[in-house]
Image (tube, rainbow, N blue to C red; front, top):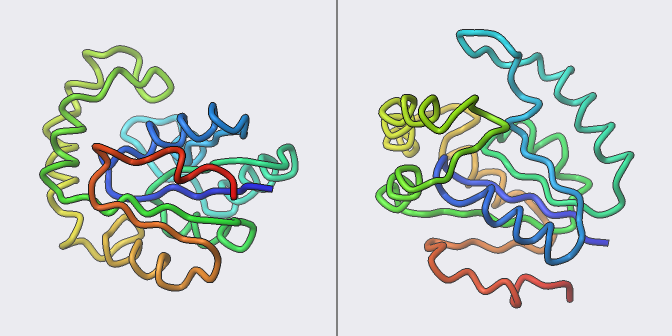
Length: 169
């Protein structure tokens, strides 16, 4: 049974790839953004224990799944249950272009205009990927990738990710 984690920088294409994999193989899809944050302004991370409970409920409800996000702390929680991981390790310039061209994400923003208002902050966040030393950093993602013992794939360009190559073995 396929249980896939997709991770990388903001704008790397995690959501797009996860949706494609989910639809192609009929797997449940979880975007970690939907459970990692409290519904408050300004945004505030939920306690790890709360996120862990929600992840456990999702895992219990689904035999096959694709989970995506940039949270290395949450990836560490679900990693032991994953059959494979995909690291979208794109250059920052590609991530910025993807962020500028992303469609409206209604599960994150009330409107496309609200999403676009956040673009300047998002681009600054993307640019700092290699400089940060937090759970969202390149360093944390590379550590997770290197420490995973199952099937793993890394893409440095998402322009032509061959979905047929990612199909079930």
